[in-house]
Image (cartoon, rainbow, N blue to C red; front, top):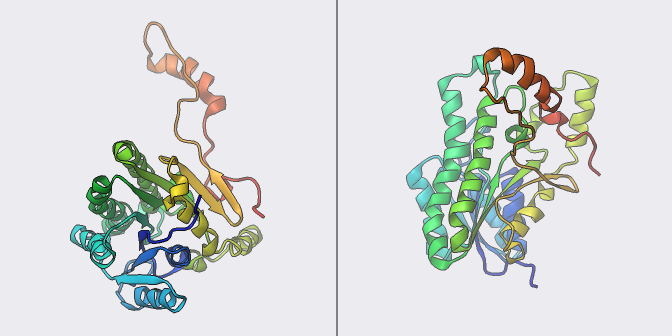
Length: 304
């Protein structure tokens, strides 16, 4: 089987920096024609600049690849339509969407404001929906297509100070599964990646303990380029039977995450009351309750 992406048309959102840039560059190296979407904002969603998207396109073209910039915001439904339109008008079709664009507004939950919530949900979750639904008619008509959505360890297991980001990234998992179910009949696939990569999103973290400092140093080995091969695989023809899954990447390690299923059941023939739940149901379930920990603890081993 040919494992390249020759002549596939791939849209990568948030591709001006970090993981998105690495994916765009790698896909172009494998022969894809890439739409590099980025509005050039800060991590908190402030400001705009044409520079990042155009610079990545220039790098791709200098290396002999093919790319086109897109400066529309994924958080704008009309902008999302224009992102997809850029691919179709410039390259004649669209074969894959990598929903990577995201912003942060980290605060403890009791300090979150409505704008902190809305901006993060609009960009990270609604933006993924807007771009995906814009591409869906083209995928349906041609009987093929692939979505790759970036979730996060925060969306999979949670992280302090990121209730808004975690809600958006957990929503990405539900969105991807829904797309996979609804679009399977049309030959369209949808998968998630939970990446661990040291990007500008982590660069501002100030460790408070020696253990946190050591963990941050190890995290610097998780470069964005480590994420790109899995994203490229998932949009390639080699992954034609892989859909509805959640993968993780940490340095040289690829993970497959389980998905929510019942793990324990108890039945009370006469129906439950508060008292019988307290005295019977919860004691029977207690050994199976999930611990309340954050994303830094979800894998109890270091990656190579």
